[in-house]
Image 1 (spheres, rainbow, N blue to C red):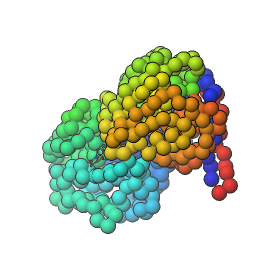
Image 2 (image 1 turned 180 degrees about the horizontal axis):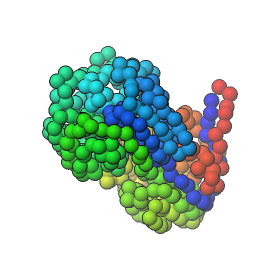
Image 3 (image 1 turned 120 degrees about the horizontal axis):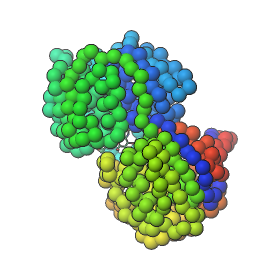
Length: 423
Ligand code: EPZ
C-alpha cells in the first residue's frame, strides 16, 4: 500500500506549474460523447478521475491516446448500448455527465448511479428535473439512472431550485442538441461551466451567458470535433498557494488565471501573507516566523470562496493566532477531515456547518488518512507546517484530483515522498 510521508517545517522555495482543471476536463470529456467527432485536448491532467473517464470513453468505443501534453479522442462511432460497469461509474461523481451526453446524442441513457466524495446526501433531483423539462423521462431504478426522450428533446425554460454545478452541466449537455431555445435560470457560474460552453461553441454549439446565472442555448444538431485547451486548475493553484503560506518561504504558482483564484488571494492577504499577482502567476511570500492573522471564511458558490478550498484553508488557519471560523455553505457535511487535523494536535470544534479553530496549537506529525480528495490536501498542508513526520494513507483519494502532488511539492523543497508499505 502506498502512502505519502512528509517531514514538516521546511520552508518552500521555487515554482510550481499548475495542471489543467479536473472539474473542467471531466464535463468536456463527456461532451465529446455528445458531439461525436475527432478531438485533440491539451492540458488534460494526469489524475485518477480523468484516467477513469478515458477508460469509460474507451469502453464506449472511442479510441483515446495521450501524446505528450495532448490527448486524441475519436467519438465518431460509439456503441450506444455499451454498458459501463457499475464498479467504474461509482468511483466518481462526474460519471453522471454521461446521462446528459447520451440523452443529447441518442435520445436515451442508462447509466449507473454515480459515487464521489462523501459529503452527506448528494441528491440528483435537479439533474432529473432538467431532463424532464426538456421533454425526457428520467428516473432512478435499481442503481441506474434511466432517461429517454421518445419524441426528442425540446428547448425549454429550466429554473433550478439551488445553484448546482453538476445539474447546470448536465442541462447544458442535454440542451445543446435539443430542438429550439433553452434558458437555464439560477445556473452555476464557475469557470468550468464557462470552459464547457467555450468548448461546445468551438464544436458549433450556440451557448451564451455562461459565467452568469442565466445561460441560453439555441439547439444545434450539426456539431463537429475540435482542438481545445483546458483551463488551469484553480483549486490546484489555491491548494499550492495555501501550502506555501502554511510552510512559509517564497513560491510562484505558475500557469494560472489569477481572476479565478481572487477569493483565495483575498483571504491569504487578510491573513498577512504577501501575494504578488502577475498575468499568469501568483507569488506567495511568507517569512517562516511571520505570524498569521485569524480569519472568518464561508465557502459559497463562485465567485465566492470555493468549497473545494474549505479544508485547505482550515488546515492553514490552524497556524493562525486566535480563533478562526470556517463555514461550509454548499455541502451538508464537509468536515470529516477535521478529525485527522485534531489527531495532529489542532484545536477544532465543529458546530453545525462551522469549524471553530483555536489557532496556534502545536501540530505534530502522526499517521493520518485522506478522508476525501480535498480533505487529503488539507492533511498534506497541515503536515508541511507540522513538527516531525506525518504518514498519510488512502492517497488514491488525493490522486483523484492532484497531478503529481508529491513531485510538485518536492520540486519546491518539501521533504515529501510516496512510499510503498507492505500491506
Ligand atoms: C461539483 O460537484 C464538483 N465536482 C465538486 O468538487 C464541488 O465541491 C461542487 O461542484 C461545488 O462547487 C465536480 O465538478 C466533479 P453541486 P457537484 O451539484 O456538481 C445540492 C472536488 O473536490 N444539489 O454544485 O456534485 C448538493 O447536495 C469536488 O473536486 C441538490 O440538492 O456539486 C449540494 O449541497 C468535490 N440537488 C449543492 O447542491 C441536485 O440535484 C451543490 O452541489 C444537485 C445538487
